Length: 419
Picture 1 (cartoon, one colour):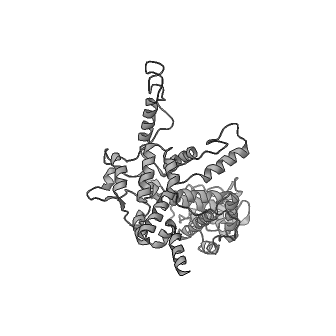
Picture 2 (picture 1 turned 180 degrees about the vertical axis):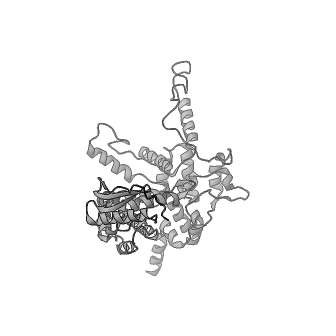
Picture 3 (picture 1 turned 90 degrees about the vertical axis):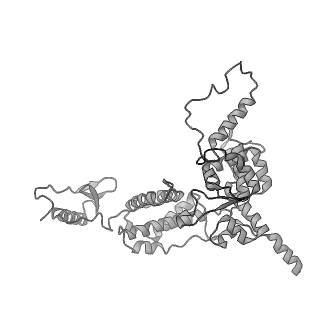
């Protein structure tokens, strides 16, 4: 017996104005039928309505009518639930959304079956035109390929589409117009010391600790007293969350005497509270400003009385990787100001001067990851590649090679001995 009443009114054959396609809505779900007014769209409408009247299962969409935007919307919903850590979407999810934003203006309304290798290369060209570097362009194209593989596995599109897209190779160094980025180099200790003079006390401690231990930026930001074992002369730190935990790997960071001296004063707090907090840094800054006050307390405003009670932005209770990096960049701008333009953009600057200032700042800034590279290089030079691999917690030595620069001095000694 049919599940649909014989008196039910059939859904209407409609036109989707935005795309010009024929549309029918069945059980609250939209079905796109092709170009409005064509015989093929009317035939598809008759078939779907006939299946509905007979009470049969109506497919959500045929592969020939699924648009690229529908594939992207479905994959983004999947990615938001799949790429999560600690209840929040990861950076991978954000990059997937960014890749979809490059596809949508060009092919969002196109049918997915028409998305061919030429279309994928056109998307890649738009990335290059937007000044994406070669490496990032390749990664974004790989994410788009992964999206279509997922859609094929979910039977949203034919398997032939991701097979064809897999034929598009990555951009090769020196054989493309895409911008090249230099590899991340370790920051020298002299530059770090100059920058430390302009960093808040809390952020400066984070920099010193990361330089000694070689931990990742997110690991130093997430340190808590309860995660640190202090029962031996060398402390061990097991982060609550780390980069490779989804692979079932354990991360243990060793903390030696020098690093312990830096960390010790941040442990006198609740065990579940983060060691390094922007709110503590801000409190120290305000206290120092109060001590430097020249106006007597009985004159003018009392200390702290002229602060905004509910500011739009408040100092948080935990440093994030971006906030940690921004603190370092602000200190770099102070430590290495432009010889003519100063350290910050001013209203009187022309567009050319602003570009020059930004170029200067970009060249004189360093990031927290460079501290990890510097620690890896020193460990490898003094203790060998295997030791560097153990400290950095890399699964293989090839990854460590990226972080630990080769010791050119040893090769030069061999060359001198060999003549």
